[in-house]
Length: 211
Image 1 (tube, rainbow, N blue to C red):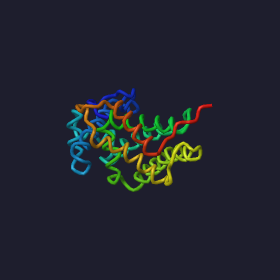
Image 2: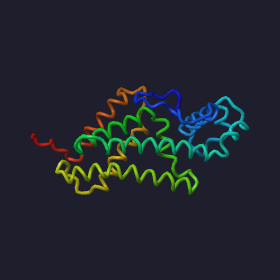
Image 3: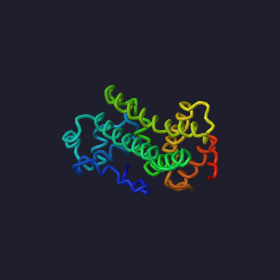
Image 4: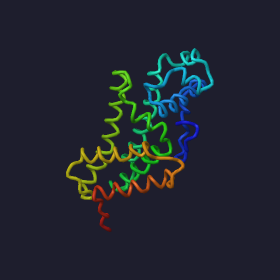
């Protein structure tokens, strides 16, 4: 999450990265990867954006790929946290799905620069790191799939294909990072509300009967 990104969701970007020099390099890498792409970015580009020498980068990160892995791991850990909190939260399936989509979309909009790198540079990771991140993505998928399955079992959702719908919901949310602009007409919160409503309509959410 670059310094220019909104933090409306209360998440402090990269607070888990220390020391400060390592954090500055990571922020610079996010901006460079998002602007130029991973393969077109050099370690000199990253160090320059951070106001440091190329040699200083190697004190904190052995390779450019290590930087990408750190960014991807932190981003996917955050995504999993968001979806798991919603899946394990109170309320009926529709309320939990609403919470999951709102918060997941909010993060992808508020931190769109980071999210683009996290979600779209997966294939640049080393095989062992890619496998690690894919495992996290499967756990995120499982959290959403559980909400949908609960809704179907309770008669709240009309979803003939739970795995396929899970993929559609996550793809819809993730794509926000590709097009969202802070200069646009909608805030991250507004986009989150819009997408939550769209997803509930997609799954045919039915109002719960009154007791």
